[in-house]
Length: 175
Length: 102
Image (cartoon, rainbow over all chains, first blue to last red):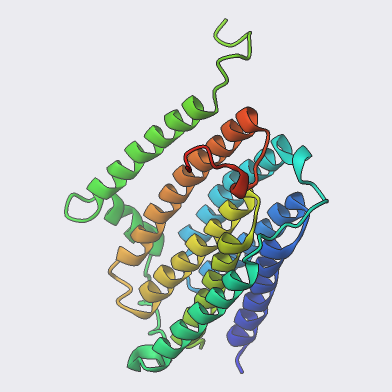
């Protein structure tokens, strides 16, 4: 085994373990913190794939914004089911069965595919993945339209989120 | 060198864990945590296929960035809905949010 394989196995095991903790732990604040560990493991996976921009965006956007938003939401709503009562619904065994079947099905499908044992070609010398990605995102021949649509979607979603979470009865709002 | 299959199986396992969380948790915020795990596993697949395919074609990474933007939008709206429901109904348990059921 090469060093890269050992690194990948350690990162994958840590990520899957913290993923399991996200879905099974009782305390939701702990679940959100385990989510941070999982997201960090995924960022390391991007780094192993030489997708350096994705690794940085994963840390900044996912860990820095989304996970913190989750922690805020948990703290704003936590007084009602903190540590008592079941955390799983009555049909949790059905969910577990479906998840295992999904994994088994995906594994079975992958086994029948010929490209599976493919290894990556070496990167061309002087290859600048971040520069290529930036060119692809703003080039009219490539992805400038999806990029702009994504920005419109973000603005619409954030305005909608403010509108939905806004409390009209809070008294001092708008003054 | 890590073969492509390791990344795909890792992503499939992470997706299944997220699916279990979505189907089994009672708390609406915990369901959203499961959705995040599933989105991340899809992104691993996109990045892996970019690396193991034609590296000069950036489609995989661009798709992953679009997924980032959609995930951020989804979390913002989802958590706003959860907080709004919590303010009106004083619950975040998905079974008890049944105003539109009859």
